[in-house]
Length: 232
Image 1 (cartoon, rainbow, N blue to C red):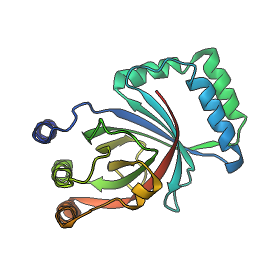
Image 2 (cartoon, one colour; image 1 turned 180 degrees about the vertical axis):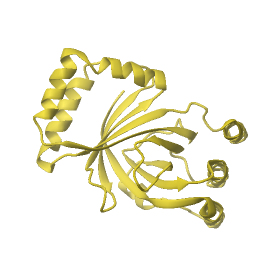
Image 3 (cartoon, rainbow, N blue to C red; image 1 turned 90 degrees about the vertical axis):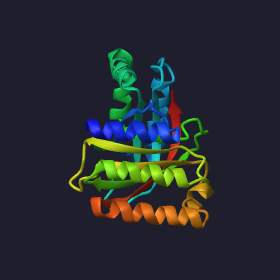
């Protein structure tokens, strides 16, 4: 682990990537279509009234593209520094939270999965965030090789100006064994469709990335989501 952290620190310094990595908790939900508006209203009523800890964001997102075996329609994503997430968990208690929870219990929404992890390398952290995002999941055997390959890929993708992150999934791992993800933010549906290599050097960089990680990882699929609202 110490060698991996040293490698990441070297990568970050060499390519001016952010050292401000974050933790996250994702609660996957099945929300009936006719109750999605009521779910948003209940969340907005609670989270708009609390003072969010510094650096913490809570987002309600809707899955747009997902694999057939993914039963969730929505997710609540808690993200930020560990200390902030701990503080938020303390805020999520008391009479107001119980009333909020009662509102949710009156609906037919169900929690279908709960996972947590952390970012390892974040790129373009100052970029304006759009409402669209895509993530790719892998089961990784050698995270040092994977991280170095990702860093080299990002160094050669000059056209990417949006937020991109490599991270690890540490809790709530499914039977498929996903351990790492790459998350990319886009501004619109068109940006989402037009993503990927834009020129020959980027095609070559993408091919090299695939060839490098193939022996030490298994690709498990993608998800695309749309942010409905973020509280921060």
